[in-house]
Amino acid sequence: MLLPSPAAAQMQSMPGQTMPGMAMPTPAQTPTPTPTPAPAPASATPDMSMPAMTMPTMTMGVGGDAYQQGSGTARLPGDEGMMRGYMFRAGDWTLMAHGYAWATLTHQAGPRGDDDHFITSMAMLMADREAGERVHLQLKGMMSLDPALGERGYPDLFASGETAHGVPLVDRQHPHDLFMELSARADYRLAPGGTTSIFLYGGPVAEPALGPSAFMHRASAALLPLAPISHHWFDSTHITYGVVTGGLASAHWQFESSAFRGREPDEHRWNIETPALDSWSVRATWTPDPHWAVQASTGHLHSPEAQEPDANEQRTTASVQYATPQANGGGLATTFGWSVKDKLPGRALTAWLAEANWNLGRHHSLFGRVENVDNDELFPDVTSPLHDRPFRVTKAEGGYAYRLPIAGPVGVALGGSLAGYIKPAALDPVYGNAPVSWTLFAKFAVGL
Image 1 (cartoon, rainbow, N blue to C red):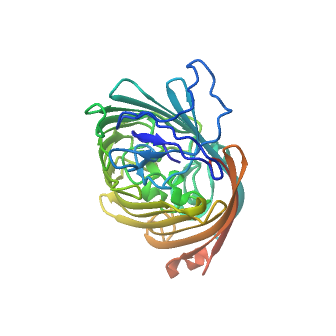
Image 2 (tube, helix red, strand yellow):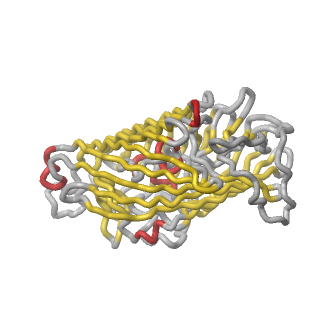
Image 3 (cartoon, rainbow, N blue to C red):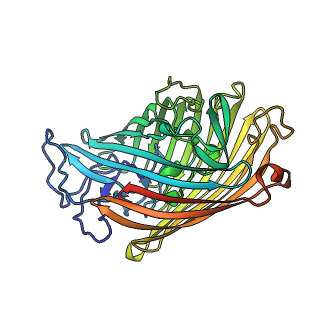
């Protein structure tokens, strides 16, 4: 999911439609006159008769598109590097709505696998406006009904992280919280009409400056039905209770630092937990042109896991994202990443990730992900002879989806994927010799 950056935005049309351009005022540059639909009065309800619009392509600075804003304050490539939403005006505010409901049937193979059907969901509303010549304001709210899945979430072989009923989750993806983000951001341009600004971001539920944009917001993962098993190496901090981030942003660079709560969300998913600022992170991002977003970050997480309250973690990540549009409604989006979790004091566990989504045209999509993780949480039972031992596991998944519109900005993707695993022989008695998992899905989304 794309969250508009502090930059001017040019609307793009849904496939098969044409739209007049619309420039939005932003904290990075003053707006230039372009044809726009007439804004509704401030007291009026949004004009839902407006044609469906996709998420904007962000332009920042002299020379055209530079980047798009992903989750939190993370950046994405400016070309096809986003998921899409519906945009409309309400007085001085520009609003964007996005969401999905993802119906999934999965068979996770082997003795520790499981069969399940479930629905994951997300809904987001974002609002932007100018507040004078130099100030730009942004509000974001995001929610999910994933807590209805129950504390144990859904099966995902070799995934680990967080707890259910007081027990660490293994071979399952935990549900996301009801409140995924409640945040605000203010940008102050250093010069009127300039492309450089300082900003302050945060909220009771927000995302610190650590890692790439979260997987559900990356176009490279738009049709991958399950969470990556490397989630807790790269982007598990995307739901954090208590975040304050300050930074310097320009067209091609962003430098930022966060104070935040290091503890992962607990298993009570319906509430808002007590914020705290006991951890820190720093991140530098380079967006040289509309095709690339490169970031490096590190953070110190205080007591991130409830089962190991005395263990802190130093997490360091680096990622490269590339995206480009193609003819006939197609586009390619990719992410490559590396991360290391140094469980202080002692063990350093690394992970690698490569994922891609290739829209061959208006309807057909191919997607895939390969990840390699060194995981010491697969056997939480202290009586197991394999307890606390790290095992390096590779998961490779690929699939196909057919995308089609339903009504207005709403569309559906129907597809499926196959996944295979490479693991040490010591895990064969527990996971089977060669497990192969499959997943079928129907993803209903705004602006798919």
